[in-house]
Image 1 (cartoon, rainbow, N blue to C red):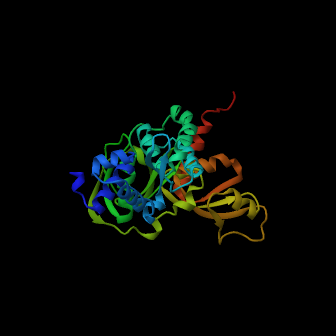
Image 2 (tube, helix red, strand yellow):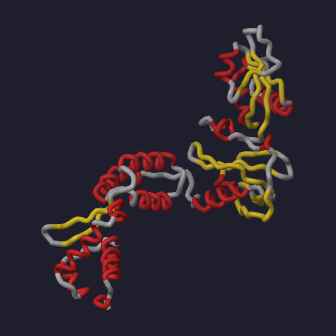
Length: 318
């Protein structure tokens, strides 16, 4: 069958075999294709001199076995792949099966000669890898990425709650071992942050929703490497911080000086900004008497309730 191939078909057949990890020499060439040495060399030169082939591969010759084989040049330097893999494994964000799948795909981007080196360097980390979750995360990331781009309305359940909610995914990001998704809840007209791996039975609806600009939270501005501040509902706050302006701006997350601030008062600064309700509560509690909440009233009410609960731990001595 192979001996009936024309020149182009024969060269493609040889190349496919080499790319699959095979080898070829003159004897096997004659047996497969029934051609002589001159045709063999011409076919090999046609492959070796092809610009598209040379961009990704190299033709090698084993002088001991007298066989030709192909190695991959590598699209990315091995040190870059090593960094990506080490950071990925340190994140603990994906299951071990997904990690191994991704490692194999990334190693395909490294040159054949460097692949074993990278494998050797990452093996201890793989053996001790303990993912933050065991369930697959790739399918969920794909679905929510599609829904964010298409502005598609979805229905979903969250964690152990039985209520099905309606929302529009706005963005996905990663922090502290988990992926998070920002969702605008249609019925409640508010934006909330969720653990992606805790979302269940998410289904897309046909409806496309343009979420109001004031409900589309600036993820980059609000992450700041501190997921603890990114829980709860989005709020706009106004605080009275007991310090000068620069110190206030340095210490209060996502803040700017309010129009209500007295520029002549260097002992306190009124700042405003955007946070999430649970994160704002945690931050205010951590500041003690250095900060006074001016707005919103919902945060003031939560703060009073939390402080009252804390005081119950320390009854007056009798």
